[in-house]
Length: 343
Image 1 (cartoon, rainbow, N blue to C red):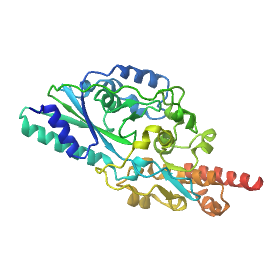
Image 2: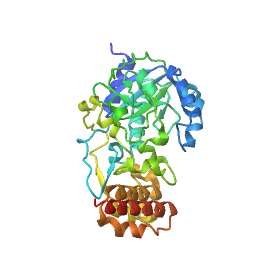
Image 3: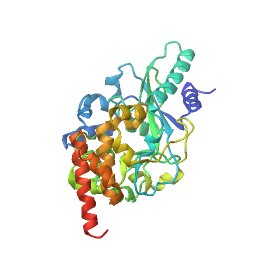
Image 4: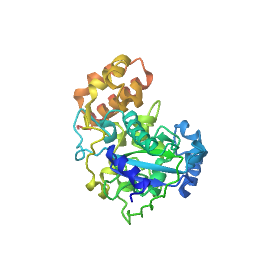
């Protein structure tokens, strides 16, 4: 006879999850590292990560009725890595699909509704990365993968291009076995990071990470890190692109076909607040806000070193937003330095 746990995981796969597993609700042993990470200031300016610090390490403090937790991984893999192209800014793969939060919650909601029909006393609470839960740790103990040296969850079947969603349940279900670590002696992800954002294996200094700098950071990007950001307009995939396990990555059906892998930078720089909202309000790119995306575009144009972008940067240098204006002025200076060197 098929167990309820097996049926539940099968139902999650029917909802588009590529992987599904069950973990115990107890705090994973590695959750204690989170407090040390915060104390070291690795979170940068993301003060929201300091809130609910205890609950992030123990799901039962967030949902006291939890007796088990279903973890699901949805693939957002897309095509081969994009080569830098003049005038374009690269976009991280996860942001090439529509805002995934409502879609993943809808799919897990369907799973919960099915479970309630099977067991009238069943109840649960859905979470994605907007909740104070360390999803990757629970996913590891649900058997979905292991935590790689770049801090990403890596599946031997899917690689690391996955989005995680979970369902905390008031039913006690048998947990799956955790995955063994298969990184071995490989250090490609650590060595490839342009900003040296990994002080050690499995420790990310978010304040130096390109994804943080282009998405989460408000205000100016620190000058010493600007050249290393390169042409990234939103996020960064470098530490994943070099991971050997991602040769197995394949697009999943749940999130639809990926959109643009790169955006034209000059139009981004010219967007006002209304135009930004109209274009990106249903996209993950909205998280950077108009200031952040225009700032990133100005930086990428400066790093590109092409004189043809000088007029656009000159216009941006008098932008009403002082952060955008300062970044455009810096990029103009960078273009001038390239010209002086005869580049």
